[in-house]
Length: 328
Image (cartoon, rainbow, N blue to C red; front, side, top):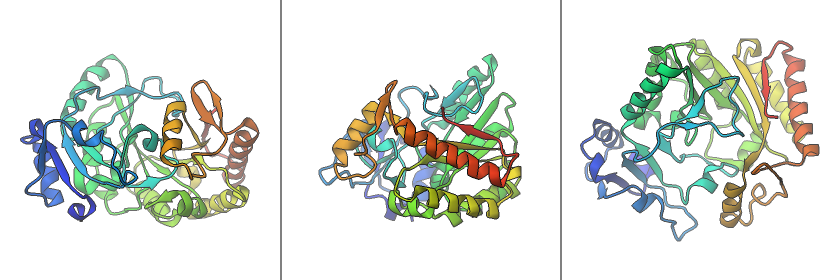
């Protein structure tokens, strides 16, 4: 499966003997990868065919392994909020994704020295509790059969009282949760969108019904689950689409048993959107006339507040006890 997904598989020379590299190559069915000096020799090169190339690169992380969360990301009340880029780029192709403005193409780079990240966390956890978004620059669950990183992060959370981990995903797989170490500190967050939005803007991702099955599988296994109506996308008839989604979600799971719910409209850094507009001149999302505030583009307040307030009201009408975080 994996070998068919990627055009080519590259490995940094210094990562060749890493146990993580050997595990991933074995899972990918690759016995003769292309050896390179540095992952940027491939990852940072723009392809000449609209960035359609989709290669896998295995490398060591030469820089920071933990970053403080960006202002436009919800911290959910956690003072020490970080994200960890153990994988860069995603197999899904959502039109609005900030990764399109952050990275030059579709290549996926997996850093095989995850244990080094955990060593840095050892020191961090001695100072204060840490809340880490481990699936910020990719969808880790969609890559789990290749990397095994979701399982490793869950093991880490289960064994460290000063660490909480969020795994955010659109993946519909249901088989894995019963096999993962369960703890209240491993949070699975599911991004939910109306099917009309998924079909138009979230290329390659499961439809809402599939994501709901995965959400329920995680809850049934004992994991805390977060529902993310974020980002909401402004389109014609958006109220009908999001109201119908609220019905489907409320009828499909016990909202009172969900850890919390996040609500937010599309927002992105100035530079990432500028890059996306150059790459996607015909994109309905990239070319929308957003307003810039504090270095980030977002919908005008009249649109943004109407959408977020609407979604909040729809959820509270169906579950008055729902714990809701909105991005404001």
